Length: 337
Ligand SMILES: NC(=O)c1ccc[n+]([C@@H]2O[C@H](COP(=O)([O-])OP(=O)(O)OC[C@H]3O[C@@H](n4cnc5c(N)ncnc54)[C@H](O)[C@@H]3O)[C@@H](O)[C@H]2O)c1
Image 1 (cartoon, helix red, strand yellow):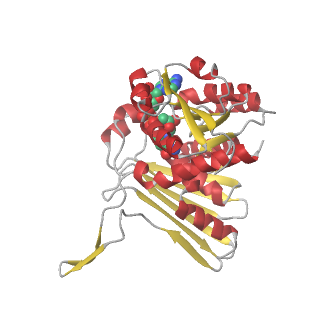
Image 2 (tube, rainbow, N blue to C red):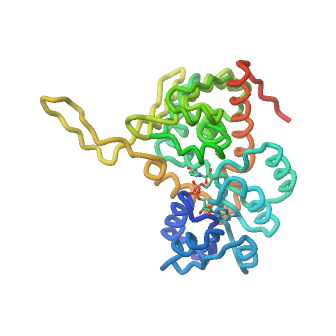
């Protein structure tokens, strides 16, 4: 542990992801949780109980705090641009949940606004910090399977979110696939082409809302690498999160996780195992912890956060291209500005 004082942190949002971040901040000796902000003040108060943090309802109260070192933004997507802009203006580091925003024009305006700022800003693409996926990526980079030729990313949620969530989600590409598009860029940063198809296979309210419940995305990297992303809003056997990297000299894979490694072998069947970890809160618990550690390390060592703002922007560009391709049936080229 560092001998420096803990970094003073404020957390925005006391919902699903806010609760994950609160737990991890409290467990990290490098951090002191001083404020929890949520206009739903009862939520902030409940989460702050017994932690020493103060619950507040507004961002003004957060940014009035002296000596604030960092904010963690776990509030709804439409609050992100404003909060990270305010943090940068005050020289306060920020770890912001994905996506930066659903509207690419707002993201580009935010980038212009942040140009020249060297305040640390990390994007919450937590899957880069999953020990299994991170290991596959590092071993591909180290050349263990030769030249990467094909990458397959499978990501299926256990069950669709309610209609109210889907309606404001920005659609499956910007809401769900965006994690996998960032994972693709973790392996192959330069993507030049996107094609996608979308289907409505099982969920009437998703179809009524004009969204897809199942999509497949094909990406092509600058060196011709072929990347396939398969997403579904449901999976009968739990959170299905797998990855396969195929190269000229071999293959690396990362499979689903179960709570234990116990297997049952009887006359009725062999290799019966526990169900997979149910959803992202359990499946990526370690990734969220490591993401926070990475953020602290960037602040302490003055190194650029990774993933950062540009990664958030690039993933949104790819999500928009996938949506365009699925709607038009055309392949979309990705240009660099
Ligand atoms: N990285 C991941 O795996 C992951 C997982 C879930 C959600 N997210 C992202 O996190 C964000 C929040 O999602 P969630 O599922 O936790 O939502 P949620 O609805 O469970 O919680 C959001 C909370 O933010 C509060 N809030 C609303 N406006 C606010 C403001 N201006 N300031 C502070 N708090 C405010 C709400 O009252 C609510 O308590 C979204 O951007 C989402 O995309 C990321």
